[in-house]
Length: 105
Image 1 (tube, helix red, strand yellow):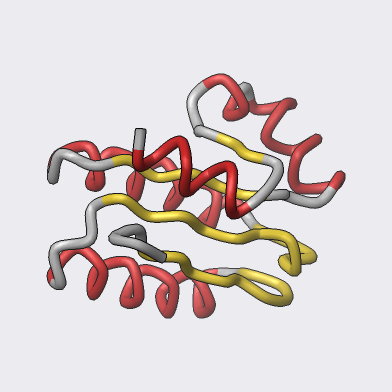
Image 2: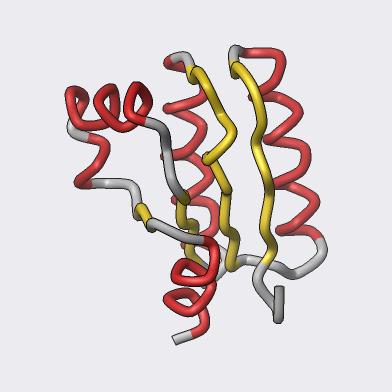
């Protein structure tokens, strides 16, 4: 999306699915896209491996001069992030369009 990579995550995420997302994220960085949006609107579950990956991905994007934004985590995932204090560390957005605009600013 105009220089910003958008990854759509769907379903339940454990270690296996997280590895697939890691591969997709790595491909974004290799292709020079350090501004990345991860659409979580259709993600129904994320385990601790997935949540830890979000932090790692955010740090890796920053190392490349970019940023990572997570879009529309469901109530369960958002509550888990809040319980762990991750909502203060991870960048969240209500829409893909808003996230892309933030990353392009």
